Image (spheres, one colour):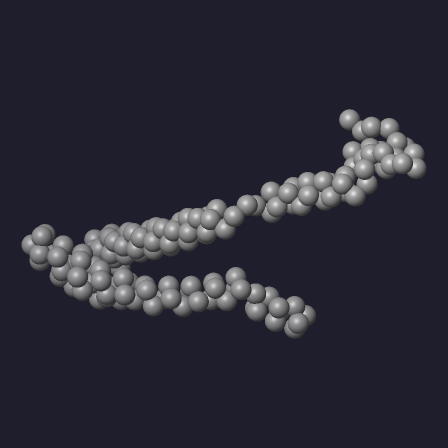
Length: 170
């Protein structure tokens, strides 16, 4: 069982996934900073200084007026923290857009590599099938010249298209 586990972990896909998770965790910190430090202040400026991340509505319970979100949560009151939700949506949209750009860039690189590979393959010469057909034709011509259809002894050689019984194959 340990050998199977080691083989599973050593597979390329598992290692690629682990690297992706680590990079994703680091990327999440960058996006969170972008939203909190760049986008939210701009939105706050547009909306007259409103900070969305701390916005909430008290559904049930007592919370002092103007209390920060953390205090409202600690008071045990039922709150609807729509500001946190808006921040999460903005984070998601930014991450989705950046992933879209990354995938688009990777696809562009792959397409360029495929075009280059196809150009090299077509410039390299004839395909394997064409070369094999040429070799077959050369061998057939050589065989025909080495074994003429009739000889002075009266023995005839089978042509390359003849069957072992001597009848022509169509």
